[in-house]
Length: 339
Length: 236
Ligand SMILES: Nc1ncnc2c1ncn2[C@@H]1O[C@H](COP(=O)(O)OP(=O)(O)OP(=O)(O)O)[C@@H](O)[C@H]1O
Ligand SMILES: [Mg+2]
Image (cartoon, rainbow over all chains, first blue to last red; front, side, top):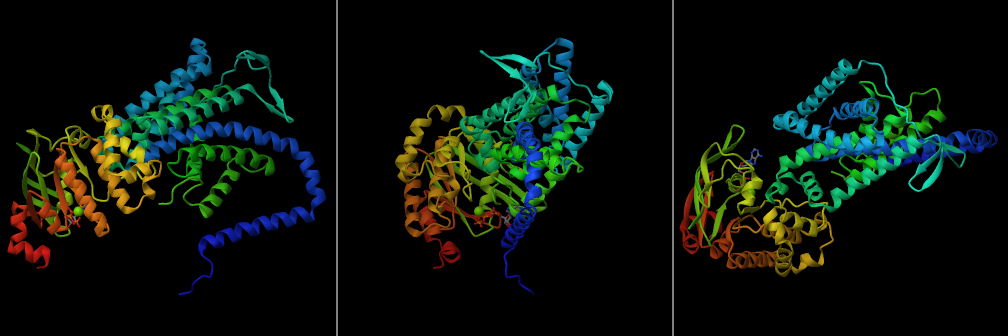
């Protein structure tokens, strides 16, 4: 048997170092072109950075929900995106029928999606708890298909969007008057994207505190770390499964309302977010809550920068490159625990 | 008063039977030892009593109530608590958080500060390492934490599954001391051990499990004198 001198991990680092070296050499040899390119693309790059980070906050929130459910129940919820679509339509209907401001409708979509999550866990996932995990996974896939088609019947495939009546020009934010869109460092920041980012981060922070500080949160972490151990201190693990699924789903309820002012909704709208969230979860480390947020920001950034650097490519190309690199160098994810 | 009565317990994994008709009784205030070779079914017995496994047939009665259909958390709530094999701590939570989780249910939660103080009196080591992640503790410290966490639930009957496993002789001594002290303070104890001499000399009574059946039972000191025990477990 032939034995490699280098350990696999060392070999990976070597590959990365080589790639960076080659990149530096190319940039140095073509210095003039590089400077020209940077001056021309500088603003575009900065804009992409800002946009990427802003949308990344929302990706982080969606991924947090997914990773929370995975950490406790051990299943990838394929219906996560479809449930987000439900939240988006809910926001849409609340806005068009009842004139509810989308940021205010977070107060409705979060509890509603939390409730839907409880019901889905109790009546769809829980009955299959003794089935192999891949069967539970198929169950969530079936649920996703059901929701998508149900929404198709209710709302047709026509993409719909909403327009805020405010957010252009002088806008009162608390006691301040702020001129939107903001222009900072040559970039343009619109109110809907800024609001989505700020609220997403605040909610993610709230969820993190809940998990770290409250007894309920600690019980959730306990079940994720040792289910039998949790049962043996008197924690009702099925109740925790249910609440966790509800909380995870509540995350997309919030994200749904936050993205609608600058996005559109059709029966598949949430699923685009979920594909990103799968990658984000693996990137951040399966089950890691801070990892999900970090991963979300990185994915948002990669996606926007990727479009600028390789304009002809699909949006997700850069994302998958980062994904593959992480799998090579840190298979447990950025903030994941080695198993 | 009979605290726990196990009658005709049949338990298996899949098609493989592991326990075939185990019966035991534990009186209030006792220390009872359950000994047996590797694979005899000791852990399986405790898991079934705790509700983590379901029996094919047989009954488990605790303080007069049939509990063999109850969920584990309800059994803990009734005061029947286990320190499981492998400790089952929450490795990425701190020592303090692990102990707090012991007092998760409403009753014990009210007494949390006093219970914490009692556990820290019993194991000063844990007080020093409050902020440390449980997964980074030494084996002995982990065992202390597992016992401490179980005490936080305010058990009436504490079951311990091989608490001395993998510990240095000095530590084994102090774990046995602690078990004795817990019992003196009013908690009934069921202890599973391979360390037959020491366990039996501490216990009021003992049961010997072999291939899923109780083959011998009696007072602790009497069992130590028993020829069959001496041959099989004491190597004398
Ligand atoms: N999850 C399982 N699936 C299948 N068989 C199992 C499982 N757990 C235990 N067994 C089998 O059941 C039998 C009894 O196991 P058990 O763990 O109860 O023994 P034990 O008396 O606690 O042994 P030890 O002293 O080694 O801990 C063994 O033959 C074991 O292989
Ligand atoms: Mg065992």
